[in-house]
Amino acid sequence: MSTSSRGGTNNSNRDRYGAPTVRRTALAPGLLAAIAMLAGFALIGQSSFVIIEYVVAIFALIIAWFAVQAKQWWWIPLLLTVAVIWNPVFPFSFSGAYWFGAQYLAILLFVLVAVFVKVPITEEQKPGRVR
Image (cartoon, rainbow, N blue to C red; front, side):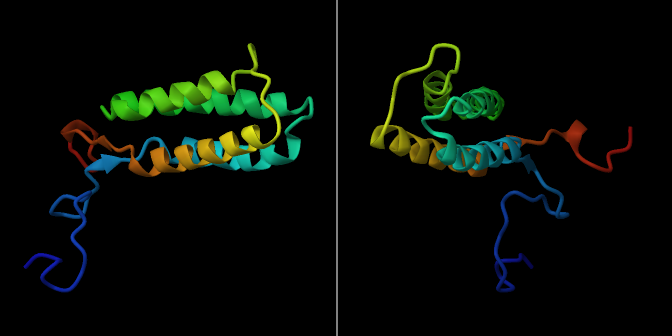
């Protein structure tokens, strides 16, 4: 009897024994980047905002690599755009409402990528496997 016939939900991210079949590798860096950007709202326009720019650009590249591993290429151009716009080495001179709007869009992007990027677990990576 399947879980959906018992009134529960059918979780496609688990195998028949309840072990996960995917890893959400972008979850932690995506949420950390979103939190850093939320904290960065207080620093916009100040010289210490460069720290937020470094954090965001680095996390965008890390998450883009996880998207490559998950073979979800449609996230890559968006993440590379964030890495370029928040690049502290060659900064863009955005200010005002446009910069706040870009911050909100990037936060939304990081959360969406964190939730939707999943890397399949191979047989060798499954826990409890006897070697």
